[in-house]
Length: 199
Picture 1 (tube, rainbow, N blue to C red):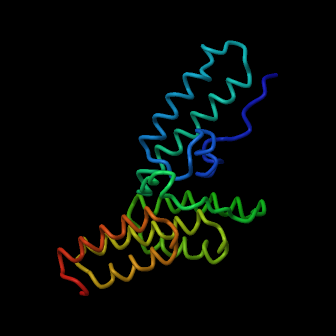
Picture 2: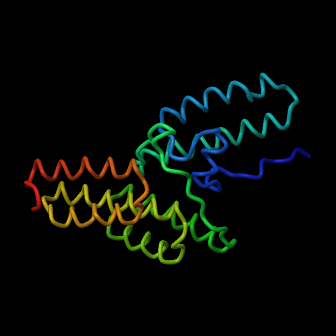
């Protein structure tokens, strides 16, 4: 009886997906696609006939790739800058089995809320998760991205003061994320252009 890979597509968190693809966390979608093509050629079953390890690695690569290409555009995660400019990787304390399950379920629900622009529900969800897992770097990132998505909607809805408030909340939620700062600065410039500074 053949063994099956131990990791299923949505069972991996983003950090694990990047690790499988041999990329730094936060790599761009273009980097993800490039790494997948390179590693898929290396571990493809046609290149490694009868090699179960290579076959399982190939499946994991595909799973990680599938998750990232779905998640990155939805969350609008900005790519990391060069290695020299990026901040050191953040490590989160180990989670219990229940917390891992809660995190994965919340993540899937958050995706749905963001996809259908249910921003108030998304904010309630991610704030509750952040209060439950305050040291989890990934959750802080989701919280910041959710705030930023809502701020952009508020800009479209011509509510500049509320938009500024949520952009500030995004920076406070994930203050060491340099790429987030760059994206939020663009949003502030948009606000300044449309509504003037300090409005």
